[in-house]
Image: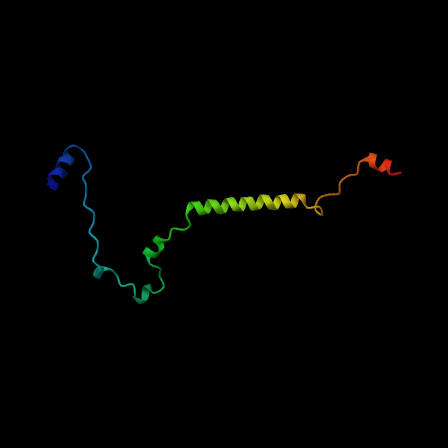
Amino acid sequence: MQKERAASALQHGLPVPTPLPKRAAASARPNSNSPGRANAPSLRAASSNPGLPLSLKLLGLGLGLLGLVYGLTLFRDHPSLSPPAAVPASMTDSAK
C-alpha cells in the first residue's frame, strides 16, 4: 500500500514520505565506560539543560536596570559629590 502511494506521489510531483530510521538497540550503542570517553560529557546531558528560561533572564535584566537607576539616583543626590550650591546675592546683603 505504501509503495503504491509513493509511486502515485512521484507521478503527481509530490514529495514521497520516507520512513523514520529505526532506533539502534541498546547493545549497539558504544560503551560509555570506555577509557577514551571517561571525561567526555554525554550528548543527552548537554541537550537536557538548555539554560535559564527566558522569563528568568528578563526578570534579571529588569532587576539589573532598576539597580542601575537606583545607584545613579543615589550618586546624583549625594551631597558630598555635588558642587556647592551658589548662595544668592540677596542673602549675603541682608546678613550685613
